[in-house]
Amino acid sequence: MSGMEPYSVQDTLLERNRLRSAAKRGDKRAELTLEVLDQAAHEARWAATEHLRAKAAADRADREKHRPRSVSAVMQERRREREAAERKRAEDAEHIEAQRVAGMDERQRERYEKEKRGEILKVNGSW
Image (cartoon, rainbow, N blue to C red; front, side, top):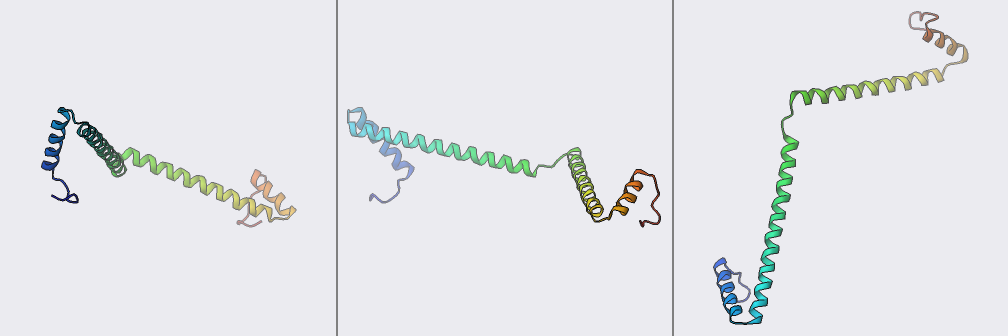
C-alpha cells in the first residue's frame, strides 16, 4: 500500500494495535503517535457531535416554523393584524384631515370647527 491510498477501517485498527504494542515495549515515537491519533479521534468525534447538534437545532427550528398553529393563535394573529390596519387607517384619516384643514381659509376653518363641535350641521356634504 503506497502512502497516498486511504486507509480502510481494518488497516487503521491494525496500525493502532501495532503502535499500541510498540508503545508497551517502550517506543516513545509510537507512544506520541498514539497520543496524536487519540487527540485527532477525540476532535473528530467532538466536531461530529457539534455538527449533529447544529443540524438538530436547525431541524427543530424548521419544524417549529412549519408547525400547525392552533385556531386561537391564528385568530389572535388576525385580530392583531386587523387592529394594526385600523390604527393605520385612523392615522391616515387624521393626516388627510389635517392637510384639508391646512388648505382652508379662515372663514372655512371657523365653519369646520363649529361643525366639529356640533354647533352647526353640515348641509349636503358641502361647506
